Image (cartoon, rainbow, N blue to C red; front, side, top):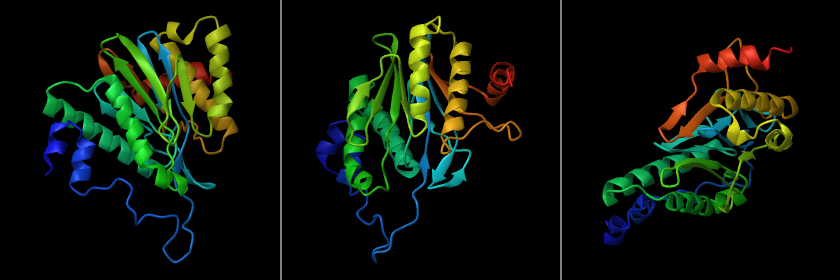
Length: 267
């Protein structure tokens, strides 16, 4: 084990120093004999917005491969540590691996350095992982465009950051959306934030959840890759809140009640 890998508090460097590779050279867009593999599984749509107490992060549950629905129970909003989550749009296999490496990197840093990694350090860690994944993304079998949301304990405010597949990170001041269903809801978020009677940051927890469910229903209406609500199977979006108290999941019972009273009331 290299001494430098142990002293810099970087779990990713420790893995690479011991021969681990995030993007194996053996993976390619074909089978090694010139034959293309089938469509790669992908997931959409994700969004994040700032509300009264912190940040809400949500995603639909559908994963597709071309025109085929592969899975309708995909969790696209993943806990990274106590005060941050990663929402994934793109190839789930790559995104889940990025999330696992981030989680262990932050945990390793905390235990080896006896302090939390700064928010800026966490952002750079995600950017680094996306840059390491460029060869996979360029082959069309590993592209990920995530949203990273965290509560900044030093500044006492929620933060939203979105990334392109090359690792460039940008801050979403009020909200951020990603995935194939995002064009259908980006304008709605802008309209609501500017002319909706109250800004997103002024919304209560319940109002933010209701708006999010309506937005994802809108995305599902116009984008076949975005999954809608299935009331018979009690299948609802994944929604998490990131506040000063930590990350909290919204239970399906609450989503079912709000959906019945506030989303389907005009149907």
